[in-house]
Length: 353
Image 1 (tube, rainbow, N blue to C red):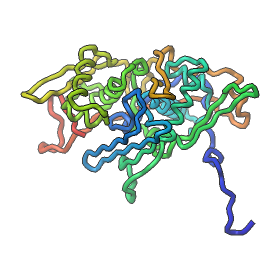
Image 2 (image 1 turned 120 degrees about the vertical axis):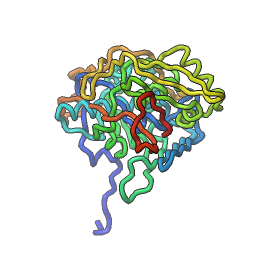
Image 3 (image 1 turned 90 degrees about the vertical axis):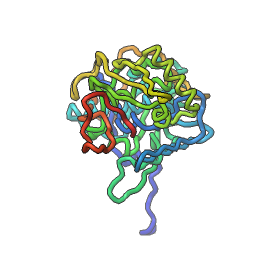
Image 4 (image 1 turned 180 degrees about the vertical axis):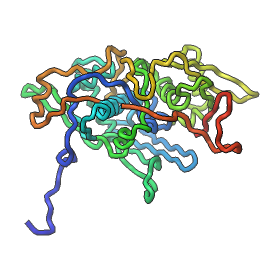
């Protein structure tokens, strides 16, 4: 071989140590950056039109391919699950990696899905969308970097038996997401009831509520037009406002109370926490919808957590992580610079990010 020639690695997995999800329960955790910006389609129909969002120096662009469509907020359950495992393992002192190995059974049961053959097919459809969706963002850029581009999953694979039954799966998370998970200040505990929310907007609204209102008694207030921009929704502002009013009428968000307020022609949504089940920062929390042709469907939550069987570890005999998975955030709100030096008011607060 010529000195200039180097063997090409066909898989990023060959250069990473695997993190094997073995057994135990992991409290649901979400990555803060993903909770407040429009990174996912909120529709169950296939979306191919891009998302373009900018607020100050923060820019988010999301692109989809026609074959699979854009990754949806239901597909994001897979990323929430992965973040939960990594965080819990770090809390227990185990070595983690952005290369995860697991069984479909573990993932599906943890996010409240059924485990029939259809559910496994839907899972693979979600993984395909996560891999094919391309994100460009200026969030968490390094000192000399202006923008980063990545997909939610770099690559994924499945381990099958001779009769074709899928027994093991693995995927590689992008470095941008992995760094946002292992930084404890960038992760928040979420209510496991989140997985029971069936509407795209209400799922997205819960994540916004958890990120901004947090556990503040006064909550947080948003203008409807501002919420519409943050959501990345393709609906008109007027139709989006109707959807918000319907959600307010139903009050489906676990741990939060919603109220609409009007000042002249301006309509605002006030989000206030009530009876939150998410404990303190390091406390334990008690505990994928169709999107077009190859979606992943939600089926309500059974008990969360992993249910590993002994035979699962024989899929990858070279590994031995007996393990599991963290949390939180010192401040769940973003405030614009104010004339009063940025000090929060005594009453409720509003977000414009």
